[in-house]
Image 1 (spheres, helix red, strand yellow):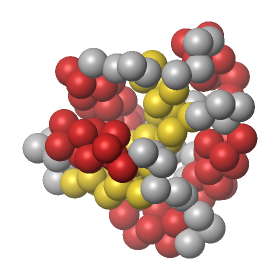
Image 2 (image 1 turned 180 degrees about the vertical axis):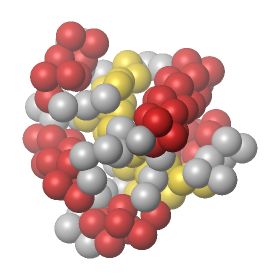
Image 3 (image 1 turned 135 degrees about the horizontal axis):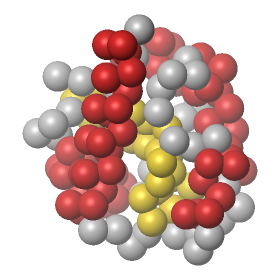
Amino acid sequence: METIILQHIDSSIRDIVTLTLEDAFEVIALEYLTSESAILINTQKPAVIILDFILDGKEALGSLALIKRIDQTIPVVAISCNINISQTFRQYGFDGFVEKPFDLNTLREVIIEIANAKHLSNMQK
């Protein structure tokens, strides 16, 4: 089973996203990504990383930069209530987004689609 890493500051969102995705992925849920998370990312080689993009997004952008320094092939998805995330996610460097409030089925579809796209890309190499 593939692994995903979920970072979200709200424990209730971490719990519901984990429950939504745990039949398809091993979910590692964290409140924050730290520099020590680099070891976790290197060892787990997640199919997708989901980041909480809040307010101005500074923490998420710092985490995104850390992830891309470790492995540029890991898709990173922003979960955000930012009203323009659908227009700005790519310019920030994210591979996808889920807008808050989100439908759990939509979240699941987005994450599975991005994980499958990565898997297909790796098979073609």
